[in-house]
Image (cartoon, rainbow, N blue to C red; front, side):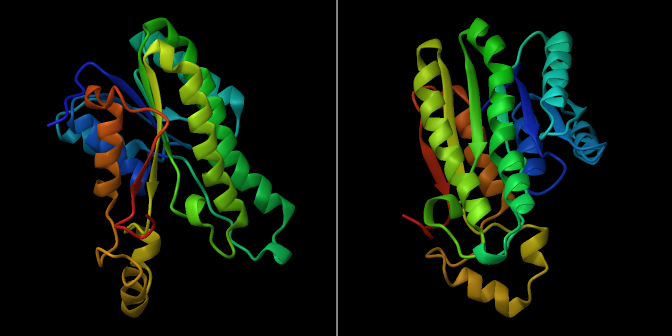
Length: 246
């Protein structure tokens, strides 16, 4: 079992879905988790972690506000003196066909899904460089690898995360900081649960393993890349998609 005892981990978008499961699984492996989200939306995530006897705290974060990010990172460093793991998970969709897509829908998705990862990563680099260690894991998507009609903004943001991660991995490898990507495929979330039974069957038919993935499938990949066991892995994309894209 992967052990992360003594590690301080920040997870953005930790209020629900993949982010919530990543936060709880990191904590179950021994990390002290900073669950970051808008308002107090991550409070229930932290309550769940603490009820299990693990360590976590809420961080109020607006990922499209650089000042909010800097303040959150500064507060974590003041309390703990280090940051070992950053999981850039926060993301939104604003789906629309290209001819109908509004510029604001493009800007919001890029700002939330891509630019926030740049700002958060830049903010944690100084303490990680000083420590000569660190793990950055960015949550992309199979859509960033294959494209998808009606998601030009989302696909661009998720593909951008892959290129960003590879470039940053080259910059910081000499300081024992790794930067990797997890690219989920079709995952069971609140959105997919709202689909009809037939729609879920149709989606699953696109996956060679014959089922949708779970948030735990994604979280397990994140925990591995955040661990010492993955110390010789950097600049890579770990696809958690059941074979949907190979």
